Image 1 (cartoon, rainbow, N blue to C red):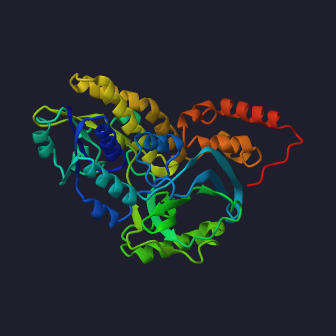
Image 2 (cartoon, rainbow, N blue to C red):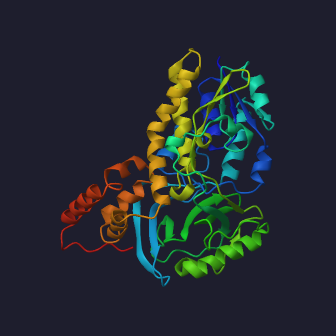
Image 3 (cartoon, rainbow, N blue to C red):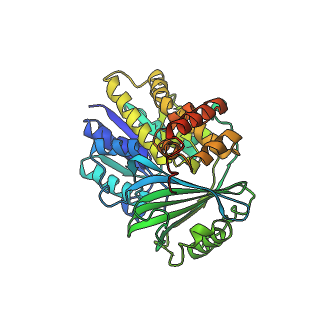
Length: 421
C-alpha cells in the first residue's frame, strides 16, 4: 500500500485525502487546527462551487450538505452608473446549479469523516524541516497549505504571473436577514455588482453553522474608497462599514439590508494577496521533492469565484494522475506531468481572472451590455463560471465577440421580446 502525506486541510487537501483513502492508499493528513477549532473559528473564504466542482464531490460521496445548501441557479451582473443607478442589470441561468457551503462546516465535517474512516490525522503545524523528515518515509508528499513558510519552497512563475502586488482589498461578511431579491424572488443567484474604477460587490447565498445565510463580499481597488477594512478588528464595525459602502455605491443592494445581522462573531474576514502562479515542485534541504497543490501553485484573485472550484478540480486531476501512475516512483518528472495536466484546466481560470481584474475593454462592455437584451449571452457568461475555457471562444478577442453577438442577435429575431432581468 502506497503511503501519501498531505499537508493542509482545505478544499483540495481534504478532497484528495478522502479520495485517496477511498482508493486504498494509506493517507496521513496534517492540519494546524482540529475540526472543532475550524468549525468555531473565523470564516475562511467566499466559496461558490459550480457544477463540475460539485460533481467531483458527488463522485466521492462527500457531498454531505447538498440537500441543505441553497441551490444557486443563476449569476447576475449589475454595473453601477455614476449616479448610483444601474447602467447594466441582468441574470444568466446556470445549466447546473451551484452551491456554497461555509468551509468551517465542510472542512470540519470532512476532517472528522477522514479520521472515522481510519485515516491518520496529525494536528500540527508543519515546517520545511518536518517535511524533510517525513519525505523519507512516504512515497509522496503534497503541500496544500497555501500560506506560510511552506509556500516559499515553490518559486514564482514570472511568465504566468503578470501581477506582483494585490489587485484587490478583500472584505467578507456572513449575514442573516438579507431581504429577498425583487428581480427574481423565485430563485437564488450569485450577484456581481461592478462599480467602475472602485471595485466589486458579490452577494451569494450560503449554508453555514446556523443554517442559510448570505455572503457580502467587497473587492476594492487598492487605495480606493473600498480599501478601508485594514485594521478593523471588531466584527460589528466591519459590518457597519460594509453596509455604509453599500448605501453609498450600490443602493439597490443596500435596500435589502434593513434586518441584516452577522451570522456569528467569526463571520467577517479581510485581507489581500497577489495573484501568483508558482512552480509545482518544492525541493527540501535533503534533496527530497514535494508537490504543490491548488492555491499553493495557482492562486487567483477571487473576483471570478474560482478558488474552491479550482481546488476541487486540482484534487480530482491529481487523484487521477496518482491512480494512473500505479507503483512507479513519484519523481520530479511525474510531479511536473501531474501539474501540467491540471494546468490544462487552470490556465483558463488564470487568464479569465487576470482579465477581469483589469479595466474592461470596449468589446467586453459590449458583451456585458448585450447580455441585458439577449438572454443566450447572459446564460453563456454565467456558465463560464463553471467552464472558463469557453471564454476563449467569445470574450477576449474583439472580432470573436462581435461575431458572436451578431450571430445571437440574428438568431433571436426582431420580434422576440427582450428578457426580464
